[in-house]
Image (cartoon, rainbow, N blue to C red):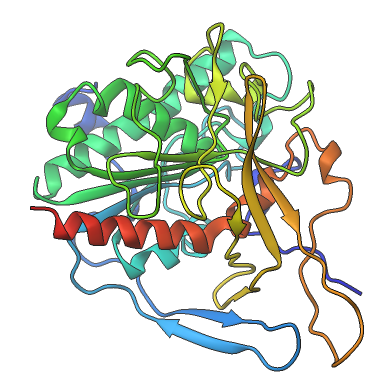
Length: 366
C-alpha cells in the first residue's frame, strides 16, 4: 500500500517602523540569531529513493563562510490561547525551524526570529474582522522589529534571501512592500524572495502599489532580485478556497486588499517562470527522502487565477519489488486549502536549488 505523503507542516493547525525605545522595551527573541553561536547548523542528509532497490544517501553540512543570510519566517505554529503568539524561542519552534529550513544552510546562514504570529486558534477561515486585521498588524510589527535588529547587527554588504511559508510568507510580503521596497539600501541587499503558500496577488498591470510592491517575478533558475511565490492545487481553486484566489480569506495575512483586475502569483520553483518540470520533494524530517520523477508541477491559468498545479506521476506495476512511494492526499482537488499543507515538502528541494543558484549569481556579480 502506498504510504500517505508525509509533510513538515503539522504546525499549521487542523486545516492546516518602531523606534529605538520601543525596541528596547520589546527585545527580539531569536530562534536562529544573526550573530554569535547558533544551533541552526548541522549535517543534512537526503535519501534518494529509486523505484526499486536501496536508497542512496547524500549528506552535506552547513556552509561555514557565506556572504548571504536566509531570513526565514515559519508558518502558523502556535496553539497559544490568545490572538498573538508570545515571542519565545521554544524547543518546539527550534525543532520546527530546523525541519523546515535547515537544508537552506547549504548556501546561506539561517536567521529566524520568534515573531508574534496570529495563533492557530485565531486564524480566520471565513469572514475577516477588524480584530483579525489588528492581530496581523501586531504580528507584522514584531517582524519589522526583528528586521531592524537584523539590519543593525549585520554588515551592509551581506545579501539576504527572504524565505517564508504560509503566514510567514504573508508577513514577508508586507515587509517587502511596506519597508524594504521603499528603501533602496535595503532592497539592494535582497538577493531573492521565496514567499510560499501566502495567497499573494498582484495588480494588473503591475505597479509599486500591488501586493509585491511591483517586484519582478523570477524568470529562471539563477535569477536574483526577484520573487518566487505560489499556492499549490491539483485543480483550479474553488470559489470556497481560502488561498489561491484574489481576495481569498488568508490573503488578509499579507495586509494587501486585492483590487479589481488583480492576479494571483505563480512562479514554478522547478525552473522559474511557469513551465512544467519535475519536483524535488524533501519528505519527512532530517534525514529527508526524495523521489525522482514522482511529482511534476506547472503554473496553470484560468482568468485571474494562476496556481501551481502539482500532479503525481504513477508508474506501472510489475517487475522488481517496488519501494513505497509518497502519494498526494485523496480528494485534494476538493480541499479549500488545496495542497497548502503539502506544498512546502513537495517543493523544498527545488527552493533550495533556486536559493543556491541565486547565491552563486550574487557572489559572481561585478
